[in-house]
Amino acid sequence: MQTLAIVILAIAINSVWRWPEKYHPLTLFRLLAKGMAQKVKPQATDPPRQHRISGSLGAIVLIAPFVVLVALLVYMAEYPLFFDAIILLCLLDFAQAKRQYRRIMAALAKDQKLLAREILGTIVARDCQRLSDLGIAKAAMESLLLRFYYQVCGVIFWFLIGGPAIALGYRLLLVFSWEWHWRLPGYYWFGLPVRRLARLLAIVPAFIGAFMLAIVTHPVRGFKAITQCKHSDPTSFLLALSGGGLGVKLGGPAIYGGNMVRYHRVGGPLNVKYSDMYRCIQAISHTSLLLCGVIIILMTSMHVMFIQ
Image (cartoon, rainbow, N blue to C red):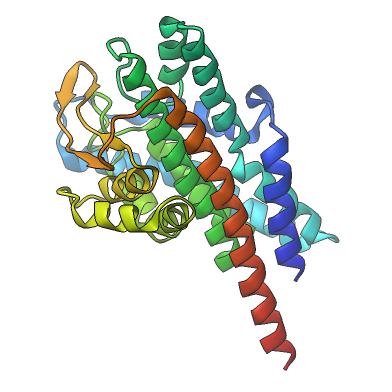
Protein backbone atom coordinates (compact mmCIF):
# COMPACT_ATOMS: atom_id res chain seq x y z
CA MET A 1 0.00 0.00 0.00
CA GLN A 2 2.92 2.34 0.61
CA THR A 3 4.21 1.63 -2.91
CA LEU A 4 0.71 2.37 -4.23
CA ALA A 5 0.70 5.72 -2.44
CA ILE A 6 4.13 6.58 -3.87
CA VAL A 7 3.09 5.79 -7.45
CA ILE A 8 -0.18 7.72 -7.29
CA LEU A 9 1.51 10.68 -5.60
CA ALA A 10 4.32 10.75 -8.18
CA ILE A 11 1.84 10.63 -11.08
CA ALA A 12 -0.24 13.43 -9.54
CA ILE A 13 2.78 15.68 -8.92
CA ASN A 14 4.23 14.97 -12.37
CA SER A 15 0.95 16.04 -14.00
CA VAL A 16 1.01 19.52 -12.45
CA TRP A 17 4.68 20.29 -11.77
CA ARG A 18 7.52 20.56 -14.27
CA TRP A 19 11.09 19.90 -13.18
CA PRO A 20 13.26 22.52 -14.98
CA GLU A 21 15.23 20.71 -17.68
CA LYS A 22 18.41 22.64 -16.96
CA TYR A 23 18.50 21.30 -13.40
CA HIS A 24 17.06 17.86 -14.01
CA PRO A 25 19.37 14.95 -13.07
CA LEU A 26 18.65 13.15 -16.35
CA THR A 27 20.04 16.14 -18.26
CA LEU A 28 23.46 15.18 -16.92
CA PHE A 29 23.13 11.70 -18.39
CA ARG A 30 22.04 13.11 -21.75
CA LEU A 31 25.22 15.16 -21.81
CA LEU A 32 27.26 12.17 -20.64
CA ALA A 33 25.76 10.02 -23.40
CA LYS A 34 26.69 12.58 -26.05
CA GLY A 35 30.19 13.01 -24.63
CA MET A 36 30.74 9.27 -24.38
CA ALA A 37 29.70 8.78 -28.01
CA GLN A 38 32.13 11.46 -29.16
CA LYS A 39 34.99 9.75 -27.33
CA VAL A 40 34.40 6.04 -27.94
CA LYS A 41 32.29 5.77 -31.12
CA PRO A 42 34.46 4.11 -33.78
CA GLN A 43 34.97 5.46 -37.27
CA ALA A 44 32.42 4.69 -39.96
CA THR A 45 34.94 2.42 -41.68
CA ASP A 46 35.38 0.20 -38.60
CA PRO A 47 33.52 -3.13 -38.53
CA PRO A 48 30.01 -3.30 -36.98
CA ARG A 49 31.24 -5.61 -34.22
CA GLN A 50 33.58 -2.90 -32.94
CA HIS A 51 30.71 -0.40 -32.93
CA ARG A 52 28.50 -2.76 -30.93
CA ILE A 53 31.24 -3.48 -28.39
CA SER A 54 32.01 0.21 -27.93
CA GLY A 55 28.33 1.09 -27.51
CA SER A 56 27.75 -1.71 -25.01
CA LEU A 57 30.79 -0.88 -22.89
CA GLY A 58 30.04 2.85 -23.01
CA ALA A 59 26.51 2.34 -21.70
CA ILE A 60 27.62 -0.14 -19.02
CA VAL A 61 30.36 2.17 -17.72
CA LEU A 62 27.94 5.05 -17.28
CA ILE A 63 24.75 3.25 -16.21
CA ALA A 64 25.73 0.25 -14.07
CA PRO A 65 27.81 2.02 -11.35
CA PHE A 66 25.18 4.73 -10.87
CA VAL A 67 22.31 2.22 -10.59
CA VAL A 68 24.23 0.13 -8.06
CA LEU A 69 25.13 3.24 -6.04
CA VAL A 70 21.51 4.43 -5.95
CA ALA A 71 20.30 0.96 -4.94
CA LEU A 72 22.79 0.87 -2.04
CA LEU A 73 21.86 4.37 -0.88
CA VAL A 74 18.15 3.58 -0.89
CA TYR A 75 18.78 0.29 0.91
CA MET A 76 20.77 2.04 3.68
CA ALA A 77 18.44 5.06 3.96
CA GLU A 78 16.44 5.47 7.15
CA TYR A 79 13.36 6.52 5.16
CA PRO A 80 13.63 4.61 1.86
CA LEU A 81 10.05 5.39 0.81
CA PHE A 82 10.89 9.09 0.63
CA PHE A 83 13.81 8.41 -1.72
CA ASP A 84 11.67 5.99 -3.74
CA ALA A 85 9.17 8.79 -4.34
CA ILE A 86 11.87 11.29 -5.33
CA ILE A 87 13.48 8.80 -7.73
CA LEU A 88 10.15 7.92 -9.35
CA LEU A 89 9.20 11.58 -9.75
CA CYS A 90 12.60 12.22 -11.35
CA LEU A 91 12.26 9.29 -13.74
CA LEU A 92 8.76 10.12 -14.99
CA ASP A 93 9.59 13.68 -16.15
CA PHE A 94 6.68 13.75 -18.61
CA ALA A 95 5.63 17.32 -17.83
CA GLN A 96 8.57 18.62 -19.89
CA ALA A 97 7.38 16.68 -22.96
CA LYS A 98 3.85 18.06 -22.51
CA ARG A 99 5.23 21.59 -22.19
CA GLN A 100 7.10 21.30 -25.48
CA TYR A 101 3.98 19.83 -27.08
CA ARG A 102 1.85 22.75 -25.90
CA ARG A 103 4.48 25.21 -27.18
CA ILE A 104 4.19 23.59 -30.61
CA MET A 105 0.41 23.88 -30.42
CA ALA A 106 0.67 27.56 -29.50
CA ALA A 107 3.13 28.25 -32.34
CA LEU A 108 0.89 26.52 -34.90
CA ALA A 109 -2.14 28.44 -33.62
CA LYS A 110 -0.25 31.68 -34.38
CA ASP A 111 0.96 30.35 -37.76
CA GLN A 112 4.58 30.43 -36.54
CA LYS A 113 5.76 27.40 -38.48
CA LEU A 114 9.46 28.15 -38.13
CA LEU A 115 9.16 28.28 -34.34
CA ALA A 116 7.06 25.11 -34.30
CA ARG A 117 9.67 23.27 -36.38
CA GLU A 118 12.46 24.51 -34.11
CA ILE A 119 10.68 23.26 -30.97
CA LEU A 120 9.80 19.96 -32.64
CA GLY A 121 13.45 19.47 -33.60
CA THR A 122 14.39 19.39 -29.91
CA ILE A 123 12.18 16.37 -29.18
CA VAL A 124 12.47 14.22 -32.32
CA ALA A 125 15.41 12.84 -34.30
CA ARG A 126 13.89 13.44 -37.74
CA ASP A 127 14.53 16.44 -39.99
CA CYS A 128 11.78 19.02 -39.49
CA GLN A 129 12.72 21.78 -41.98
CA ARG A 130 10.33 20.60 -44.71
CA LEU A 131 7.34 19.66 -42.56
CA SER A 132 3.99 21.32 -43.21
CA ASP A 133 1.58 22.43 -40.50
CA LEU A 134 -0.11 19.05 -40.45
CA GLY A 135 3.23 17.26 -40.63
CA ILE A 136 4.41 19.13 -37.56
CA ALA A 137 1.19 18.30 -35.71
CA LYS A 138 1.42 14.61 -36.64
CA ALA A 139 5.08 14.31 -35.65
CA ALA A 140 4.40 16.04 -32.32
CA MET A 141 1.48 13.69 -31.60
CA GLU A 142 3.57 10.63 -32.41
CA SER A 143 6.40 11.82 -30.17
CA LEU A 144 4.09 12.57 -27.24
CA LEU A 145 2.29 9.24 -27.52
CA LEU A 146 5.49 7.19 -27.71
CA ARG A 147 7.09 9.12 -24.87
CA PHE A 148 4.02 8.45 -22.73
CA TYR A 149 4.17 4.72 -23.45
CA TYR A 150 7.93 4.35 -22.95
CA GLN A 151 8.62 7.05 -20.40
CA VAL A 152 5.56 6.90 -18.13
CA CYS A 153 4.04 3.44 -18.54
CA GLY A 154 7.47 1.79 -18.76
CA VAL A 155 8.91 3.50 -15.69
CA ILE A 156 5.82 2.76 -13.56
CA PHE A 157 5.76 -0.86 -14.74
CA TRP A 158 9.39 -1.53 -13.82
CA PHE A 159 9.09 0.44 -10.58
CA LEU A 160 6.25 -1.84 -9.49
CA ILE A 161 8.07 -4.96 -10.68
CA GLY A 162 11.61 -4.31 -9.48
CA GLY A 163 11.73 -1.13 -7.41
CA PRO A 164 13.53 2.17 -8.00
CA ALA A 165 16.89 0.71 -9.07
CA ILE A 166 15.38 -1.35 -11.91
CA ALA A 167 13.21 1.58 -13.01
CA LEU A 168 16.30 3.82 -12.97
CA GLY A 169 18.27 1.40 -15.13
CA TYR A 170 15.39 1.18 -17.61
CA ARG A 171 15.02 4.96 -17.78
CA LEU A 172 18.73 5.50 -18.37
CA LEU A 173 18.66 2.94 -21.17
CA LEU A 174 15.89 5.00 -22.77
CA VAL A 175 17.98 8.16 -22.44
CA PHE A 176 20.96 6.51 -24.13
CA SER A 177 18.89 4.90 -26.88
CA TRP A 178 17.32 8.28 -27.71
CA GLU A 179 20.61 10.17 -27.64
CA TRP A 180 22.20 7.45 -29.79
CA HIS A 181 19.24 7.29 -32.16
CA TRP A 182 19.77 4.67 -34.81
CA ARG A 183 18.69 6.97 -37.63
CA LEU A 184 21.48 9.44 -36.87
CA PRO A 185 24.54 9.02 -39.14
CA GLY A 186 27.04 6.57 -37.67
CA TYR A 187 24.87 5.42 -34.77
CA TYR A 188 23.11 2.37 -36.19
CA TRP A 189 25.58 -0.27 -34.98
CA PHE A 190 26.91 1.80 -32.08
CA GLY A 191 23.51 2.16 -30.42
CA LEU A 192 22.17 -1.26 -31.42
CA PRO A 193 22.77 -3.12 -28.08
CA VAL A 194 21.23 -0.33 -25.99
CA ARG A 195 18.34 0.05 -28.42
CA ARG A 196 17.50 -3.65 -28.40
CA LEU A 197 17.61 -3.93 -24.62
CA ALA A 198 15.51 -0.78 -24.17
CA ARG A 199 12.91 -2.03 -26.66
CA LEU A 200 12.78 -5.43 -24.99
CA LEU A 201 12.11 -3.87 -21.60
CA ALA A 202 9.62 -1.35 -22.97
CA ILE A 203 7.46 -3.55 -25.18
CA VAL A 204 5.09 -4.93 -22.51
CA PRO A 205 4.36 -1.67 -20.62
CA ALA A 206 4.15 0.28 -23.89
CA PHE A 207 1.43 -1.99 -25.26
CA ILE A 208 -0.40 -1.90 -21.93
CA GLY A 209 -0.46 1.89 -22.19
CA ALA A 210 -1.51 1.80 -25.87
CA PHE A 211 -4.37 -0.60 -25.13
CA MET A 212 -5.54 1.66 -22.31
CA LEU A 213 -5.48 4.69 -24.61
CA ALA A 214 -7.52 2.76 -27.17
CA ILE A 215 -10.02 1.88 -24.44
CA VAL A 216 -10.54 5.53 -23.44
CA THR A 217 -10.85 6.67 -27.08
CA HIS A 218 -12.36 4.09 -29.46
CA PRO A 219 -11.32 0.47 -28.76
CA VAL A 220 -13.03 -1.05 -31.81
CA ARG A 221 -11.25 1.27 -34.25
CA GLY A 222 -7.98 0.84 -32.38
CA PHE A 223 -8.02 -2.96 -32.50
CA LYS A 224 -9.15 -2.90 -36.14
CA ALA A 225 -6.22 -0.62 -37.04
CA ILE A 226 -3.66 -2.89 -35.40
CA THR A 227 -4.92 -5.89 -37.40
CA GLN A 228 -4.49 -3.89 -40.62
CA CYS A 229 -0.96 -2.72 -39.80
CA LYS A 230 1.45 -3.83 -42.54
CA HIS A 231 4.62 -3.33 -40.49
CA SER A 232 5.73 -5.83 -37.86
CA ASP A 233 7.84 -3.51 -35.69
CA PRO A 234 6.51 -2.50 -32.23
CA THR A 235 6.47 1.25 -33.01
CA SER A 236 4.14 0.77 -35.99
CA PHE A 237 1.78 -1.38 -33.91
CA LEU A 238 1.74 1.23 -31.13
CA LEU A 239 1.02 4.05 -33.58
CA ALA A 240 -1.63 1.95 -35.34
CA LEU A 241 -3.42 1.24 -32.07
CA SER A 242 -3.19 4.89 -31.01
CA GLY A 243 -4.13 6.35 -34.39
CA GLY A 244 -7.03 3.94 -34.69
CA GLY A 245 -8.38 4.97 -31.31
CA LEU A 246 -8.03 8.64 -32.19
CA GLY A 247 -9.34 8.08 -35.72
CA VAL A 248 -6.31 9.66 -37.47
CA LYS A 249 -3.47 8.49 -39.69
CA LEU A 250 -0.05 8.32 -38.08
CA GLY A 251 3.33 7.25 -39.42
CA GLY A 252 4.25 7.79 -43.03
CA PRO A 253 7.46 8.99 -44.74
CA ALA A 254 10.07 10.75 -42.60
CA ILE A 255 13.48 12.28 -43.32
CA TYR A 256 16.46 11.36 -41.13
CA GLY A 257 19.86 12.87 -41.85
CA GLY A 258 18.72 13.94 -45.31
CA ASN A 259 17.51 10.43 -46.25
CA MET A 260 13.85 9.67 -46.86
CA VAL A 261 12.51 6.66 -44.94
CA ARG A 262 9.15 5.47 -46.25
CA TYR A 263 7.01 4.05 -43.46
CA HIS A 264 3.44 2.95 -44.10
CA ARG A 265 0.68 5.12 -42.71
CA VAL A 266 -1.20 3.39 -39.92
CA GLY A 267 -4.14 4.13 -37.65
CA GLY A 268 -7.49 5.67 -38.53
CA PRO A 269 -8.95 6.85 -41.84
CA LEU A 270 -8.59 10.65 -41.41
CA ASN A 271 -5.62 12.96 -41.78
CA VAL A 272 -4.42 14.78 -38.69
CA LYS A 273 -6.00 18.18 -37.99
CA TYR A 274 -4.94 20.84 -35.51
CA SER A 275 -7.86 19.95 -33.23
CA ASP A 276 -6.54 16.39 -33.01
CA MET A 277 -3.59 17.72 -31.00
CA TYR A 278 -6.03 18.68 -28.24
CA ARG A 279 -7.74 15.31 -28.46
CA CYS A 280 -4.38 13.55 -28.21
CA ILE A 281 -3.30 15.26 -24.99
CA GLN A 282 -6.78 14.78 -23.50
CA ALA A 283 -6.63 11.08 -24.36
CA ILE A 284 -3.28 10.79 -22.58
CA SER A 285 -4.73 12.49 -19.49
CA HIS A 286 -7.68 10.07 -19.48
CA THR A 287 -5.32 7.15 -19.96
CA SER A 288 -3.30 8.32 -16.95
CA LEU A 289 -6.47 8.28 -14.85
CA LEU A 290 -7.32 4.80 -16.09
CA LEU A 291 -3.76 3.67 -15.34
CA CYS A 292 -4.05 5.00 -11.79
CA GLY A 293 -7.35 3.18 -11.36
CA VAL A 294 -5.94 -0.12 -12.59
CA ILE A 295 -2.90 0.22 -10.32
CA ILE A 296 -5.12 0.96 -7.31
CA ILE A 297 -7.29 -2.09 -8.00
CA LEU A 298 -4.33 -4.43 -8.56
CA MET A 299 -2.31 -3.24 -5.56
CA THR A 300 -5.35 -3.27 -3.26
CA SER A 301 -6.25 -6.80 -4.39
CA MET A 302 -2.68 -7.97 -3.75
CA HIS A 303 -2.73 -6.31 -0.33
CA VAL A 304 -5.99 -8.06 0.61
CA MET A 305 -4.72 -11.42 -0.61
CA PHE A 306 -1.48 -10.93 1.35
CA ILE A 307 -3.41 -10.16 4.57
CA GLN A 308 -5.58 -13.23 4.14
